[in-house]
Image (cartoon, rainbow, N blue to C red; front, side, top):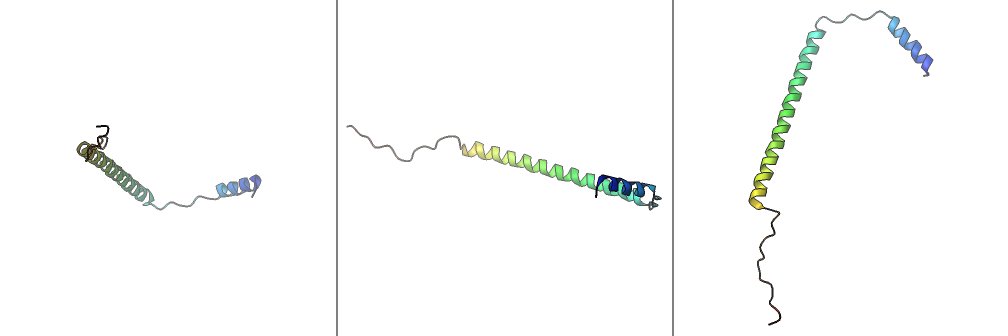
Amino acid sequence: MNRTERERVVRRLLAQPRPQVPPGLYADAVRRGERLLRRRALVRRVLWLTLLAAVIALTVWASAARPWVEPPSRTTPPVRGW
């Protein structure tokens, strides 16, 4: 379909009478939109709380385990040159 055909189809669609919108459609759309926004906000809160819990758990683990410190050696090195 080239550009002129597409324009012809669009003009034909725009020239047709518009269909009637059901009376409760607006209220349903608003209700669904509000529900979607509440769900997104809840998911966002849960993700932030999960991230916060992970950061706290990592901080507690790191302060207890201290992974950046070299562990003490369990044996003494051999003494040479005596």
